[in-house]
Length: 257
Image (cartoon, rainbow, N blue to C red):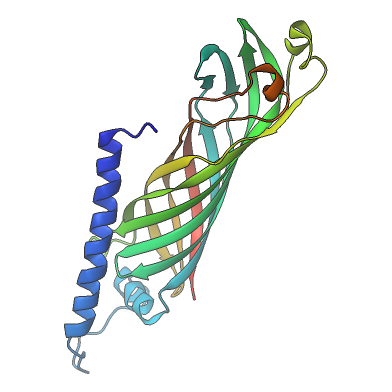
C-alpha cells in the first residue's frame, strides 16, 4: 500500500488535534462557571449570537453536499499504455456528524461519477463512451476556526475509509480492432474495496440557529483498484488502475438536530 509519509503525518495531525480538542472541551464544560444575568448582551444576528445559539442545540447534525469532480487520468500498473481519461463529473455526499465546540467528527458516504473521454490499451487509443463511478465510506475529523466576529468560519479536516469503483458501458472505438472478448461488448465491471483517504479545507457560515452553509475543496485519494470480473478475467487476467485521485469543488448544508 502506498502511503507517503507527509500525507500520513497530516492525517495524524488532524486526528490528534481532534482528540485534544475533545478532551479540552470536556474539561471546559466541567469547570465552566454558570453565566450570571449581568453577562453582556449579544447582538441578534451577529456571528457570536449564532455561535451562542449553536451551543444550545443538540450536537448531532446531518450534512448534505455536492459539487464538481475532476478525476486524474488512470493507468494500468503493469502497462502505462492502458489508460482511461475522464471528463469533469459530479460528486454527492451525505454525512452524520457530532460537534465538540470547534471539533467535528463524521461518518460520510460519497458518490462520484465521471464520463470517460478517451481510453487506450496495447498502444491503441480512441474516444470512448461510458462512465466510471466511485462509492466511498469515510470517517472524518474537522477543526473549525472562529476569528472574532467574522461571519465565515474556516475549517480543516481529513478522513480515512474504503471505496469501490464501477465501470459502466465502457466502449472505446478501438475495441473492434482488438477483437474478442472486447469487440462489440461494452465493459461493465466492479472493483475490489481498497483503502482511501481525503483532505478538506473550506469555510462555513450560519444560516439561522440550526443550519449553516459551507463551501470548500476536497482532495480524495484511493489506492490501487483491481477489476477481476469478465472481460478482464479472460484477458488480463485483471485490470488494475494505479489510483483514484479526485479534486472536488463542493458546497453544502449542515443541519443540527
